[in-house]
Structures are given as structure tokens and as C-alpha cells.
Amino acid sequence: MKRFLSGIAMSLPVMFPGFAMAAESVADKADNGFMMISTALVLFMSIPGIALFYGGLLRSKNVLSLMTQVIATFSLVSVLWVIYGYTLAFGEGNDFFGNFNGLLLKDIHLTDVTGTFYKLIHVAFQGSFACITVGLIVGGFAERVRFSAVILFVFIWFTLAYLPMAHMVWGGGYLFKMGAIDFAGGTVVHINAAIAALVGAYMLGKRSGFGREAFKPHNLPMVFIGTAILYIGWFGFNAGSASSANEIAALAFVNTVTATAGAVLGWLAAEWMIRGKPSLLGACSGCIAGLVAITPAAGSVGIGGALILGIIAGIAGLWGVVVLKSWLRVDDTCDVFGVHGVCGIVGCIGTGILTSAALGGTGYAEGVTMLKQVGVQGISIVVCLLWSGIVAFVAYKIADILLGLRVPEEVEREGLDVNSHGESAYNQ
Image (cartoon, rainbow, N blue to C red; front, side, top):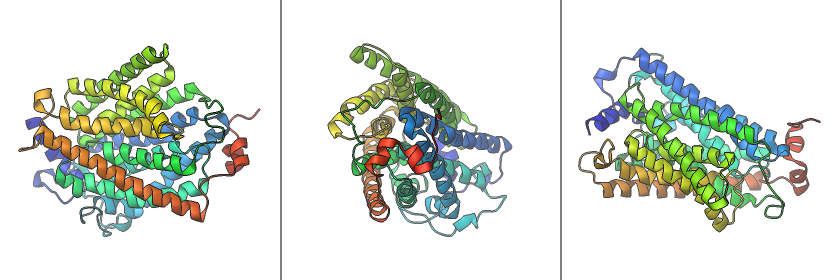
């Protein structure tokens, strides 16, 4: 309990900038360096991590279109974040949005401190989370979407879905006040992106030939490299969310290693039993599944809890991309919902259970029982699914009406690389 409260006290000024502690008014050089490195690692996850991971899963004629979407949306979100995103997510406001006082970061001075590091570093760190969340979405509707529609969708969804979710969970809003535990983005990042990707996959429809033709990854070594980059970058994602180079960061670091290893083994074992052969793609998918599941729990569950959560996530992720995807009858190109949605939900619920001190976790806040915490975690999942899903539907509709969501069938057949961007990944 003492360790848990220490971590919460350290994180409060970061999650809720209105909270201030006199003892933390001076920047610590070690924490500044730690947070800058963590931020760089998260940015590394977005470009090139997601681009390579998703790009390898596609057919060769569409790999550049996906990479272009990743870097373009990354850049768009980066600009929107400093213009109005940060102040709406972390400014003092109501339960759902911050304020407009910090447009273009005009209210932040060079020496302003959040916790024990400079506030501008907090801007960059949280901005990297916004960028990777949007990058995750594009995998759901890859290989048939119009590039201009992606840009318009991202502008709307980022403003009306990502920012309020970040404020509700980390900025002192509705779910923060309820006591939801989301250490590094189970709801804000993974479930948020997953439901938006799922809605997009439904609204664009299945790829031409889906179910009749083989749609195999064109470059598994590329998938493996992307996975490795995401894995390494995730230590900035999780450990950096401790907001200090402290014992909670150390716990999150080890938990990330442990859960991910458990998930890889869990996925491979289940795949081996069902299909007769363990695959590299299964190992890579299991790796991402474990990383997703431990994200909300990294700073509050024990090592044993992380291992249990990882093994469950590996099996649940395989179920998500094989069984659930079939039930939903959807063409989620890169299985965004099957992995990020399913394992994000597993992680959020698991956080509510495994944070218990009796199970090796850091313990709940005073007066909170396991049942109550699990209930709060469940509410945060439902709020995220509904809010993000509805906003995504509206954003896709607007993009479809104004620009058209899907490319013509002949363009899709020939490939988006040549038709949408005038270039080819593999010139012969």
C-alpha cells in the first residue's frame, strides 16, 4: 500500500496539473532525462514501429499507403496537440474537457514544472501517446480507404474522442474522479483506438475478394522488426508513465517484460494446440497482446500478476483474431480490435483484480474493495467504447459525405500505392 500511494502521489501532478505539491516545485535532472528518453521511445513506436508492423501484414501493393497514413496522421496529431490538444486534455475544465487557456501552449513557460520535470516534456510525452493512438486505428481499414478521408477522420476523432478520453482518465475528469486505474493507456489508447478501427472496418466494408482470395502478409520479417521496435518502445510507454525514475517505473519495467513473455508463450501454446504449428506471426501477435494487456496494470500489479495477465492475454488475443472476428463478420485488416480491443479489456479488468495487495499488487486506494475497483474498471471500458464508437461513426459519416471513404474497386484491385501516392514499394 505504501508503494502504491507513493506512486499515486508522484503521478498526481502529471495526471491532474491542478494538483501541486511544494516539495515537487523544482525539476529533477534525472527525471527530466528519464522522461525525455521515455518520450523518444514512444515516438519510436509510432514511426517506424507501427508502420513496419502493419505494413508487413498487408499485400505489397498497399504497404506504402499504410506507411504514408501513419506518418501523415502522426504529423497532423502532433500539430493539433500543441495548438489545442494539450490544453483540452490536461487543462482545468469540466468532467470531459479541459479549457482553451493554453492554446499553442501560450500559458507554459520554460521553467514551469509538472511533478519533478519540465512541463514542456510532459507536453511531448503525452503528445506521443496521442500520436500512437491514432496510428493504431489505420490498421483496421487498410487497403481500401481514401487518403483524404483518413486525414479528415483523424481531425474529428482526435478532437472529439481522444482528447475527452485523455481528460476523463488522466486530466482530472470523470473517470479519474471515479478512481479508474489506467496506468499507461488501456482505455485511452488501446480500447479507444480499437473501437474506432472496428467501426471503420464496418463502415468501409470488406476488401474486394475478402473471403474468396488469400490475404497473406507480404513480409513477415518486416512484421517481426516492427514488433521488436514496438516492444522496445513500450518500455518508454509503460515505465515512463510513472513520471519519475522511481520504484513504480522499475515495477512497470519488469512487469512489461514478464507479461509480454507470458503472452508470447500463451499465444504460441494455444496456436500449437489448435493449428498444430506455432508461427512467427503468432509470436509477434502474442507479444503485442501482452504489451496491450499490461499497459493499464503495469504500475499496480505484482510480478506474478503480470505473468498471469500476460498468459491470459495471449490466449484471449488469439481468440479475438480467430473466433471473435468470425462472429463479428468484419474485415479488420490488421486485427486492431481482436488484439488491442480484446486485450485492452482483459488488461483493464485484470488491473481491477490483480492490483489487490493479497494478490501481490500495490493495493487499492483507502476504502476501495476489489469488487468496487472492478466495477469502476468496467464503467471506464463501457464509457470508452460508447464515446469513441459514436464519435468514430459520426466522423466516418462526415468524411464519407464530404470526400468518400472508399477508393473505387479498380483502384483497390491495382493497389493504393500506385494510385493514391504514385509510387511502388518494390520496383521490378
